[in-house]
Length: 343
Image (tube, rainbow, N blue to C red):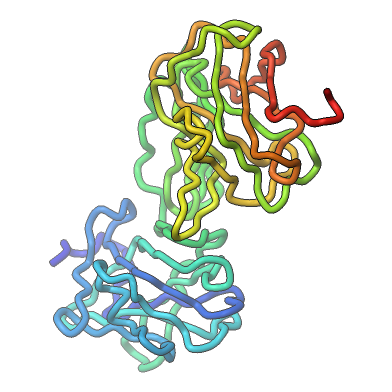
């Protein structure tokens, strides 16, 4: 059982989360964990029918509140109807003792099935059916999200110095980050949002490379790339050996096919990467995280499928600099197949 609540912490036997904004289709909670500390390191034992009872608004068929606490099943709980703000709830009542809930790890559904704002409430022991708001977390993403009542101790950022932080409230801080010489970060700031720290990585300059679609104005329904190769020479000779990890802005996901960015670096034009969404200029990219940055990049060859629907007509080559992405305008970019009007 968790340690006693910290002095001044709100305690109660019953706790619940309530949607604080509109859920269009149905509120889906795949799983939830409750913690007694702001770092989400000390889980509360919330086992339905053992340490207490799970409860929620009316559930859709084949779902239930108990399932969301069973972390090994994907069934979870789903509301039977759409949820206007404040209309749906999900919670747990502990049987033996009042506890303090300081952090929640929540896995919701996707668009239409998740609440972008969630209120944590405790039951009022002195008045049955009365609930007191503890906090409302806003800007909550779909899928998996961690949320706490306060920012825990500030983390260390490797290869960097962190300046004094600006505090907006107990759950929001922002701290400028200065990477050490020879290192850079895509977003040089340390942020605490909804009580959770998000730290930048200060990586060796040149260790990240991305190829970003800049034209046409819209590639729809997705940008598709079959193969990519990098060369040291501007005439596309002296190929660079790829040692590291492919990266991208996200890939299209379908049950029976694989469009992971690994596919563009395998030398096999029968495999491909497809962007997660339609692409506006600069919105979609694929690239590479090198274990050791190449000494030079002179040419990039990008192979698209036949036709123009899925192809970019302009691609920028960018590398990690001291303060973010820097364009390598001198690199030659060869887009294949060559458009007929360019012959």
